[in-house]
Length: 199
Image 1 (cartoon, rainbow, N blue to C red):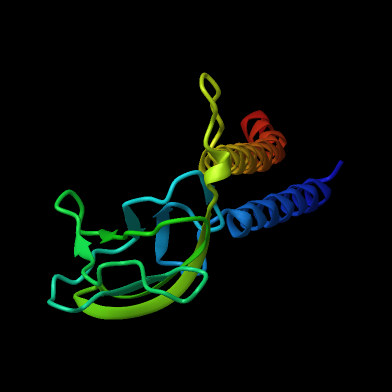
Image 2: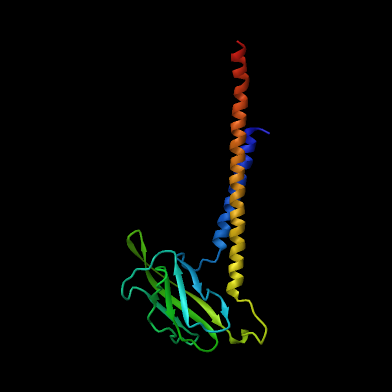
């Protein structure tokens, strides 16, 4: 097998692994907005009890300006169930807390518009997502149910584990190629060096 053939093989392996990693990253549940990295309850989740607050965590700090952030939570009938006063968490400048007072079952829609800080400038983003409240999921005595959010987190963990393993495989293939290329270049020099010493 020539160096060129090995190079093409390694190159194809790298391209395939990179495509797989990008596909996994794209399939990972990051939400409609690339800036919103976590929601509680999560988008698309079905919870057994309406939460008293929403927690929205972004990948950049939130601007600490009055009335800079707007979040509206509505039920299936279009009635607003938030108190209209979202606040930045005292533990993290990237987390927004939204008190709500929803009752009954049904889908809740979260519309948000926030002002983030990026490189010393302000970045305004807006998006929306849904989650569902279903009290029939409440466990009977002694029973327990697994929240959809837990299942989604487990799935994300598996995807990231696969992505990391692929990254290690790519690094290993690259090191192997470099070692083979270096070894071949050294071996090609050996006869020349020996002939010089013989002369």
